[in-house]
Length: 513
Image (cartoon, rainbow, N blue to C red; front, side, top):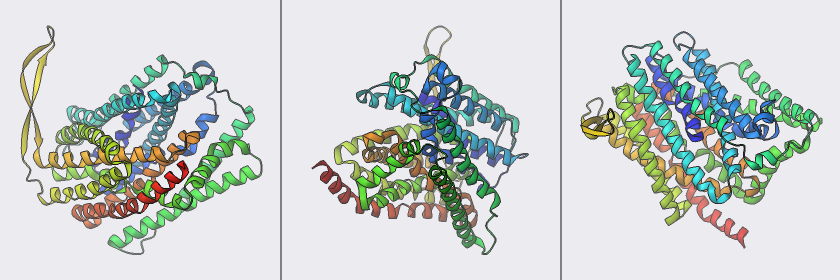
């Protein structure tokens, strides 16, 4: 149930929202910029220690450490979805962006709490079972928020040629109602024993100062973004796109560095408890660099860029399908139902491969397959909208007087798109499960939660930042060139895996000895 609650928000920021924005007439470049609203998932490690250190007034005493934070996060998710529902992007695109950012932040917070709840709820032997049931709920929610949202928007009357804000508003209200599954679960479950026994060891003023410094650093980061100008128009065409990306990347680095320096200054001036900062942020990072030494930077590069090829392509995928002429029902049937099932199958295959041939070999195979399968989108572009359909028979039942088989119905799927999605999603499943297994092997059991939060954040940060420009690249160069470029992004990753494979095995063997 908690996996279901965690899986609802993500597609409401990505694929479902992208189709809503396109039907509302928003440009492709602006649509893909909205992917940055989900950067909260990439920065959740920054406020994860806050969730461990700070109690929620009243709720922490009534419900416990984890359940109190979980209820707050879920209420914030519901509020953000409702804010998106009451905002017509044709009338308030900035308001929609702010609501999407709030949804990304609150959803990432919910993920942090659920991960902590899962780890503290049972011993290590049970974690695989808990993880698999969490993943099952998460994937079901992705079908609901992906295919379900598209079905509902079509049912309520919005199409690519006849945009209806009311239809999308009602759809997002329905998605908010699905979040009540998570709220009901939070109210019914018990607080983990380890969370109950873990008292807050610091004084109230220490927690207050810790929160104040975090808010100050965040405010400085946001302020720098607000006061810095947009990239000037120095070049034209694709060169301007590259310049704009580098300019904004520099602003981002400046803002992040300023926020970190402000936090360090506050610590040096003893405005915050140094021990809290050390335990929450410094020790896990120092441990990682101590264990991996000179290889640490190369490991972080692989963590940060392994998924860049499929994430950059995936951000604009739904817009591409719609521009090709596929209906929302086609997109929902193939990518949000059939595709999710293929990802689950691919994840199973990836797990088996990791066990049989080793994690690094499975990681290499996943990287190669991503490069190859992304080129299939070039073929899909070449055939244009000359696609054909095939029918899949599905059993039909009546429930009026028990369960009674009433015959067969047929689900029509476009052949070409289905073939591409089968190959692409199987590959994504294989690559993702191998990558997760490798990330898990990098963590130290003494800092599992914090280090894994850092790794899982870094793995999506740079791909999402770059992916925000995918619409701009498509508008400048077209879909075919973009897909070739997205595929080429994966080639250096293959070389990096080859470079690290033998060296990491040697380092791990040396540590074992």
